[in-house]
Length: 88
Image (cartoon, rainbow, N blue to C red; front, side):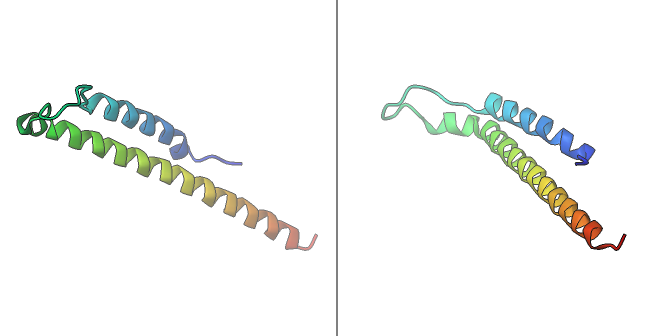
């Protein structure tokens, strides 16, 4: 099975996005009433948006790799069926 070069880069993109979203998330273990103030949320809003953007790009990269693998499987099946129908 021939694997496109782009498909080899997809896990790298997904991995970089995984590390990026993990580094950008701002989470705290203190969970009590009044522990999270509006200024804390506002100050980390851009980082959290960046984290969500990394998750979206990672999801798109993984869906793209799935689509390419499915396309290659269908193409290979059609090529095999076509080869079997050709007279010798």
